[in-house]
Amino acid sequence: MKQQKSALRAVVLLLILIIGSTPLFAQHTYKFSDELGTYEVKFTPADPNTEFSQSPTKPLAPKTHELRYGIAWGGTDWFGTPAFGWELGSFNTSERGYTSPTVWLTHNFDYGYWVNEWLSVGGTVTWTSGRCHLYSNKTHAKLDTSHVDYVGFMPTVRFAWIRRGIVQVYSSLSLGAGFEVRENYMDENIYEAFCAFDFKPLGLSVGRNFFGFVELGYGTRGIVNAGIGYRFNSKIK
Image 1: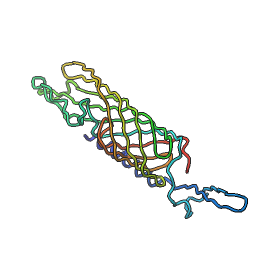
Image 2: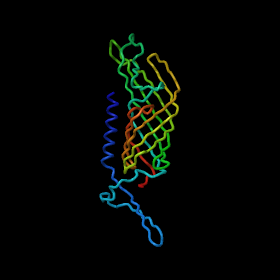
Image 3: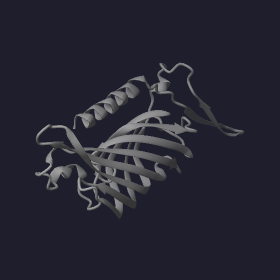
Image 4: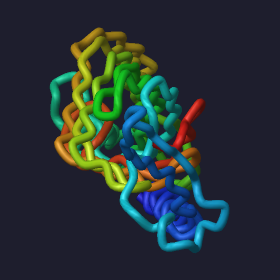
């Protein structure tokens, strides 16, 4: 649990630094007409502190590629229930020793392609890991480790329904296949396939090229997912 809290604190701190250091460079478009026709002028202020640069703009342009890495709390197991509620030490180990609390952590790796200003399609690879140690009743030395890993591969769709400057509010849906690998204290290996799914009704990203994000929802990618990302070919719109 301490490892989870430390990792989430680091992500939140990095998100705060991104929010505080990302400038609001804006491109502005003006149209005017005369007897010869209609004209459109676009320009970007050289000084980010001008009054123009603070106006609301869209955070990215279509055809932008996006990579994300997130650390989550509450990834689900193959039953669709939050994995953090399962103690791996529940096996009958009274004859050999006692167990430590189970430590759960979820890692998410995302790729997205913004088809237009509000729709992104891509994929997600997620890894939820649980670890529990067995200790001797007599010497208190570590005897063994029980672990379980859930790996999911899911196509992912995001819908950005608020786009203001470097701020984006969105929802996402993922559905694919997952695999469980489990090894308990009796040296038994278990392999299972399951349906991996994830729904995040509320997500927030802040930044343009480098950005931080946090998401709330339910599924394989966790209940709370926070991290950092980078956009390629991102243009100010």
